[in-house]
Image (cartoon, rainbow, N blue to C red):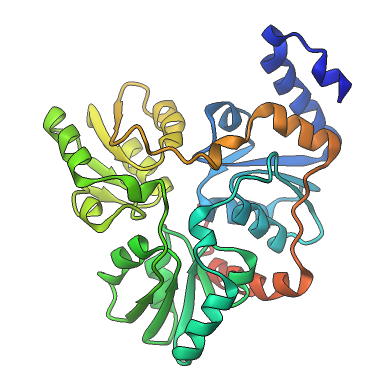
Length: 316
């Protein structure tokens, strides 16, 4: 570690990127990064994706080490799907407040009240919750997962906004947990409409973790990957974007001549931003911090992830 401390400031970024590439080869490591990461992290990642795409890539990789740049539940999922691989996280403080809003104990109590219900858990949950879940889903495949199960009664955890959105497209009874994403739930319709007044021809693209009244304004509603695809395949000059600001990196990379106006400057997930290239280098140098999941919990949780990947097996 002493070597890191002696690098001149003006050369640090170049050094860290170069060192990262060297360490990747030495460790046979793959770098997975969520779309909400800092641009510097996305720039050096081997794969950038949303929760579903990252789950697929973690399952399919032949690397010995997975350096996961996302929040804790995502790295947990990578470990659950790859128990024999080393999963590292640059900064283990990167948690998810929404995932923390539901616990295994709380879910067990709700299951006891609805013994005939099938539990569908948003992948934004802890391993302990996934262990109590019948099948996981993401925002990109939630409806397909719900329609795939036989039960007409669904316990949905933890995001009430995504749950409300999906409930509009199914006849199944949904018992919805009252969790939410702190970042997406902040956005108000007034903020979106103010931008619409400024850019009347711009389509509004919305992530379904936003409040229902915001989602109702969307010309397109979908996962982060879906939003990127919509913006890539349409030809508007301006877009109003209602999701976390980290997606700007890929939007501008794929649409350099387009203008992306984010609905609020406060749509920043601080937990996603704790990772940086320096911490990534340190993680591969020290092989810490490693993500571990209790084997008994992991075995139960894996079934819910495998069930999701069986329902939606195609590549993200």
